[in-house]
Length: 101
Image (cartoon, rainbow, N blue to C red; front, side):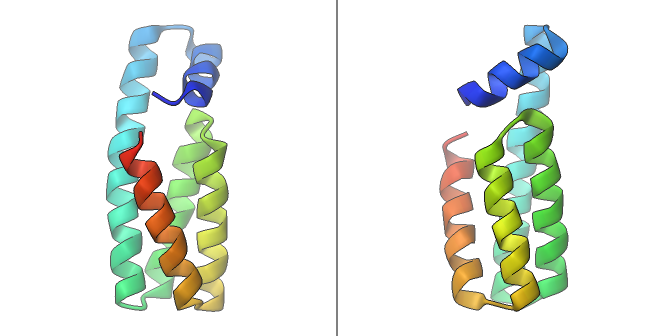
């Protein structure tokens, strides 16, 4: 578990079991949303990319993962600009971040 997330969630809930459960859901959602983002970039579906990145941002903020939330904000910007190279780069970075969770 990322230390920033553990600290944030323990401050919010104070129960290790609850923290583990919430973090587990976060990890699962990151895997799903990262795959959705990759698919959206591949198909140039900018609306789907924006929706997935928006959900990812919210999920990351809910567990205190500012690093991922910042990447999701950048991905939303790339979607709005329809910037394929930038979106591709950010999705690759998010895959690495997701794998490290």
